[in-house]
Length: 426
Ligand SMILES: *Cc1c(COP(=O)(O)O)cnc(C)c1O
Image 1: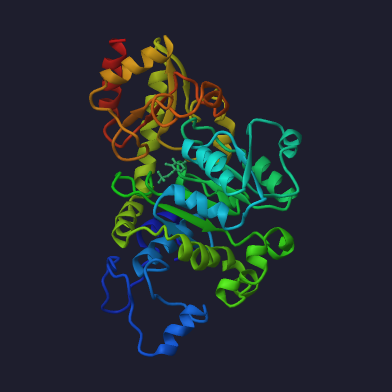
Image 2 (image 1 turned 60 degrees about the vertical axis):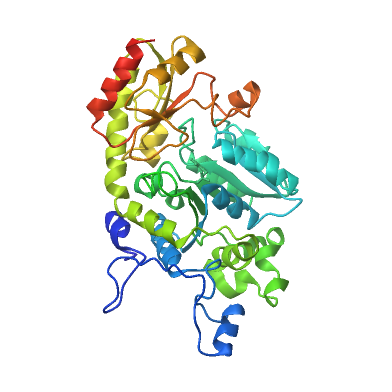
């Protein structure tokens, strides 16, 4: 399956039934798993054997879906989490502790910004936010001796900026730390960050991967490429004995699987942010059609972006598929088949006009979500980012008039007709 093409991986990877087993991934709705001898169970707790014993750590349904996502991203392993927020937290907390430091693009999801700037800070992990347009030398000045990771989004939410992978992977690797990339919006259909130097990939699977807005979830994928032992003094959690597991050294015992094994055996054991097997089943259904949906999302978004760009009430449109947009070249380089279905724009007249326009939409719904089958719209300054000051909004690249528009997979003519009637009323 590893050598199959991406569409085939979407449909078939992860669950490989043996003779007489269910063709479709079953929902293992069980917290517990049975063993015949005490010794069999004991070996699992020593990490000497792999197997299921309690769903907080592993579950066959979850594991099959994690394996599919790892295959889609070209990674060696993955762990599923109850939400994208948990995935981001795990990806960093797995290699950072109090006293450590992270460098993060300021063009990231509002929840990520809060997690890093407020909650991780309370745990003693500090973050420096950088402007991803800065040149390499300027970015280097944010790196410190205690920096442990560089973080960015392949396509940022909500500003839909494209990450310069070459610049950011160089920044991370020349300073001996991994690059973590949130690939939620691009999905592995349009971009595989590991191919461009990312070491760890995180997802909010709540978006395109699920695709139907039915299950909140997240994933962390490891490329297996980062050499923890070569930077052993920076990553004691992976390179020093884990006393809570009889002195196991993850990087020695598990090699390329060290990072994901630690995330499961230690973080999931202690923090417990697992998705339910039922949600993983739903996620798997979404993944089966991801390649078809992404294609349609991108085609529709391209037409909507072109329509908006040609409308005299529209002040600006940001969509990397539009020639002349600031990230057009980056998108062509890293996402030649398209970016995603999300775009942002502002109306002449600013904030108040934008709000009035949204209230006139009929087919398009105002919801706190993006990236599912149904077209939806959101005003970050009044909704997702309302806790940020105007200064922080600008720093995050969110203009007060910015409308985030998530183009669904309906007939694009209907979407454009709805936009047209709403624009005619403002
Ligand atoms: C939604 C989102 C998250 C958070 O995911 P949840 O599943 O809502 O917790 C993280 N990153 C990006 C880019 C997102 O769009």
